[in-house]
Amino acid sequence: MKSWYRCLGNAALVACFIVLAGCSQQTTPTPPPDTRAADEAAVRAASAEWAKVAAAKDLEKTLSYYAEDASMFPPHMPVVTGPEGRRKMWTTLLGADELVFS
Image 1: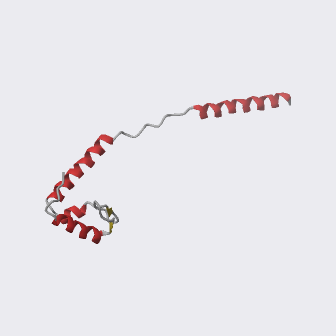
Image 2: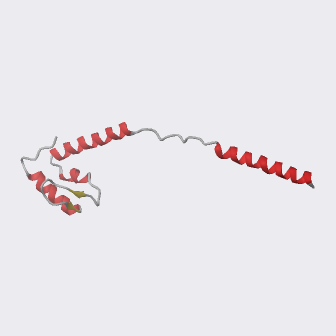
Image 3: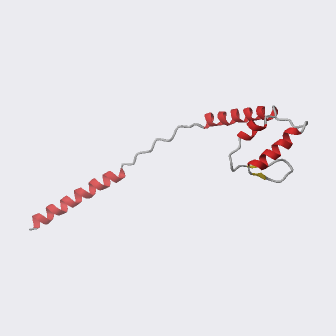
C-alpha cells in the first residue's frame, strides 16, 4: 500500500513539474508592423489634396471630405454641425475673395 501511495505521489509531482514547465514558456507576440510613416504620408497627401480642392472653390469635393456626422470649427465662429450647416458655411467661406489655403 505504501508503494502505491509513493507511486501516486511521484506521479503527482511529475504532473506538477510538467504543468509548471508549460506555464513558464512565454512567447513574445510579434508586434504589428510599424505603419506610422505610411500613415503620415497618406494624411499629408489627403490634406494637400483637400487644400487644392478648397482653393479651387469646389464646394461638392470640399464637402466630400467630411463624415456624415462631422462638425466644423470655423475660425471666430460657432461650431457648425450637420451636412446642411457645413454646406451653408462652406458656401459662405468659398464666396470670400480673401480666403487662402496653403
